[in-house]
Amino acid sequence: MKRAIYILAIALLGASCSDFLNIRPEGTTTAISLDHSKAENIFKPVSAAYAELRSYGSHSFPYVGCLEITSDNADKGSTPEDGASTKQLDEFKYDGSNELIVAQWEAYYNIVSSANNAISQMDLFLAELQKDGDKDSAREGIGDAKFIRAYAYFRLVTMFGNIPLVDGIMSSEELASLKPQTPATIWAFIESDLDDAISKLPESWSKTYLGRATKYSAMALKAKAHLYQGEYDDVAKLCDQIIASKRFRLLEDFRSVFSIDNENSAESLFEIQSSDLGKASGTAAYNTYAYVQGPRNNTPSNMQGWGFCVPSESLIQFFTDRGETERASATFLYSGSTTPEGDVISANCPNPVYNGKVYTPSVYNDWSNNGYGYDYNIRIIRYSDVLLMFAEAMARGASSAGLVSGYTAQKALDEVRARVGLSSVAPTVDNILDERRAEFALEEDRFSDLVRTGKAAQVLGPLGYVEGKHNLFPIPSKQLQLNDNLTQNPNY
Image (cartoon, rainbow, N blue to C red; front, side):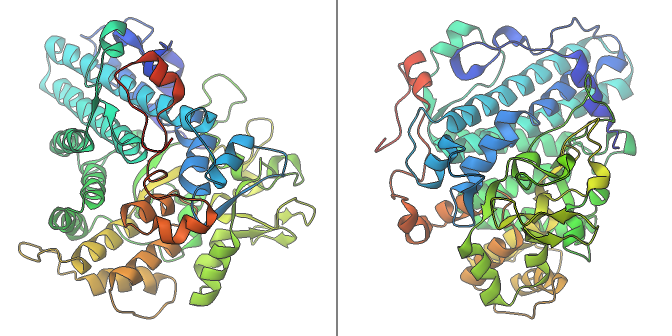
């Protein structure tokens, strides 16, 4: 059982939603009145913002559907008759009414709203708190909230393109009159938020606040934002600083990276915390990301899930062609097998293979408290991502001027490969992108990588992908009805 202190405030904070953008008007994220002169209240609004990251819409079934099942790494899974909306995503036959796409839009704007509320609350604390240390805590809270807001906008801009920018507490009328902003404007806003987060967040947290974003979390997310914009000098500089800090390392055993015991490890720059907190109800703060991918119809009951997002034949063949064994064994959970922990995956499960990275041993799945994977943290940014972003930036011509880590593209790529027993290869862009596919398979990275690198049409075209259409998701139909300023993305 895990106990991350910031999870606990979720029970104290309620919310209600407006129709437009699913955003809470007038800062109603906090349903209780806070005394801004008391330091013990500082983290409650920030905790509420973190809690939104655990929502079903943001990082469970819709997230898996939109950002992994759309790739060549995964198929829908489950049973043929189950998951019509997911099948649409798998076959690129979706439109603005797809419930999973709608859920992503609404959930990420909910995160934005909650982060905006936290920032406004921190300003009130700064005005009333007397002690310098307490004021510093409120400033750190602003750093948390701006990191969270930047992350939400990163997802929104890469998925939807031109989107409304909500940068503070607004009335319903103000929200309804918002005009979409260009990706360039959104990217600039993301970078500004992350610059502020970098300046305010500490390099690490005590165990009390384990899992909160740090300065390095914000630097890594900013590097990823620059990567998506093709700004490779900035990518290299930020990743170089993270590497030079020597605060992070790859765990020796790849499979252990995804274990409950190694959550928030030395390889982690940011994870979404999930825990039932040992309770069957009440303040349980879990996410169902792992559960919806668990082996369907497996036994006993605490070792089964919905069975969606299963590894594709393409991914299995990719690993076979590379001679991969260590990452393959961690990524693929086969029906009819027994795990090293002694859990049997029934041969009668409807799919031949499931996502092994979210496998959670039965010892953690106390059915009186939680289901399969309820205690599983979602790995959002790992150190291997920093290394491979650095390698790609250098391979694409980033300047080495001012870099201090001593790393080259070759050294960064070799480090990732050596961990899984692979020999050195030339640090070409294609080799690095292949390494990303192997390293981050089934971690909601592949589809976005294919789109940002211009490879989606070639790779996904046979699956139904159309260039100039599916590089963006459709704006939800409901949002077009609510706001006349919004325009549907091309070809929908």
